[in-house]
Image 1: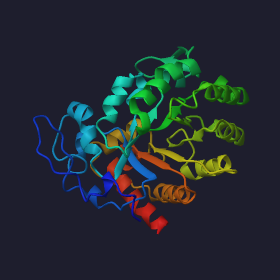
Image 2 (image 1 turned 90 degrees about the vertical axis):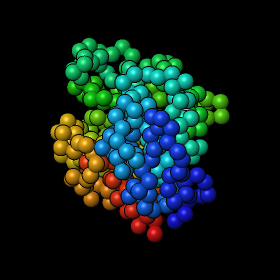
Image 3 (image 1 turned 90 degrees about the horizontal axis):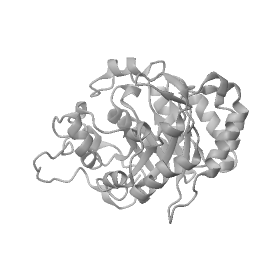
Length: 336
């Protein structure tokens, strides 16, 4: 199936002379053989600065620091990679100027999936080891979320902003036990976020780390608020089959955009997967079942005239770009 005419119909990344310190896209990447998916279906990775992607995304070997600063432009020249997850924003808010710097490195048709800062998504304040110490007074504070995240994000990225994902970190047992109250608090939080900023309408999505909250009540709340449920594949959450069922409950009346973050291989812990898969240059543990379900979900959303964002992490199968290449093939088969 052909995409609409645009920047992504070229057979490969454009040739240009490398300046000193430049990062160039891989000219013989297997990703260049990916099927030409519709423009409404966007595939991308979680971050872009991995030296192990030599030959897949980048032409040569570069230090991670160089890729972090200069690799995004090369990444965005690979036609299959039409979105990326901005994960650094989870750890600290960034300015509109910094968002604009990212936007200026990518084509007009590129879109970012952006994570909201832990400042408003984590119920506790954590130390450097990740241990929760004291309650976070800014948890689900809509005024801070608007000022520190939504406004600078939209001002900087403008129409290159895709889903704004609020990944709620693992919650304390007491909060989970009061699920009804927490869901009401989430409803109030999203209701207080801006629905329009100039000509732009932010698309908000909620990602969980507590499976107990994945209930019909939550889905009804999100539907009423116009917020998407982000399918987050992680060791703390149910497998994709169960999350797909929950998503159908959300879309019982009107289908909505599909937002997926394929973070982690089934049955693995994050650090164990990282140690097993580095340097992320090949598929180690393929998860064909998850891939097939995601392909079907993407095709169904497209047929319902909805947009699709799927980002993959290296910890899903070993190499995010190669995971997406196989996923793109399966999506094309579903559409055919």
